[in-house]
Image 1: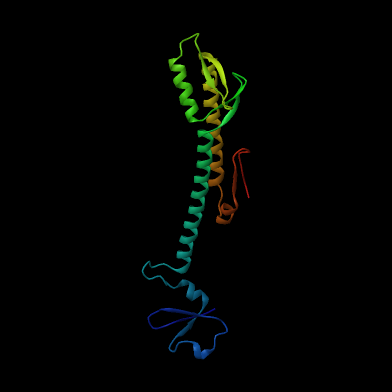
Image 2: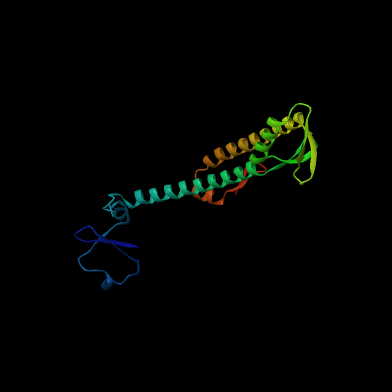
Length: 181
C-alpha cells in the first residue's frame, strides 16, 4: 500500500500498483510507519495500533466471557439434573437442586423409624428410611461440590489462556475436567 496525506492530515491509501493519475492532486506521500503513527481517529485521539489493540482486547474479553458462560451453563445443568448410583441405597438417584430440596423436605417431615416411598431416577419407587434419606442427601451435596470443584478448575484454566486464537479453538470437556483445542 502507498499512503498519502493532505494539508488537513487526512490519510489516503492506494494500492501499490495504482496509476499516478488516479492519485488525488496535492497529496504528500508518507511512509508506512508515518501512516501507522497518525492519529487517524481524531475523535478518539488514538493511533491505528491503539485502536487495533483495543479491538483485540475486546475480542479476547468477549471470547473469554463466552467460554466462561458456556462453562457456567454446563455446570448449572449438572447441578440441576444429574443422576448417580447411590452407595447408600444401591440405586440410581437424581441429585440435582430440585432433588436435594425434595430430599431435605422428606427428612424434615419423616419421623425416626418411619419410611416413605421414594422415586428413583428410573421412575420406580423404593421404600426409604430417614437414615437412607440423610445418606443420599450427603451424596447429593458431595456430587454438587464435585461439580463446583470442576467448574472452578476449568475457570482457572480458561483464565490462563492468553490468546484469542486459543480461546476460539477451546472446547470444554467437563467430564474429564479438561479443555481441548
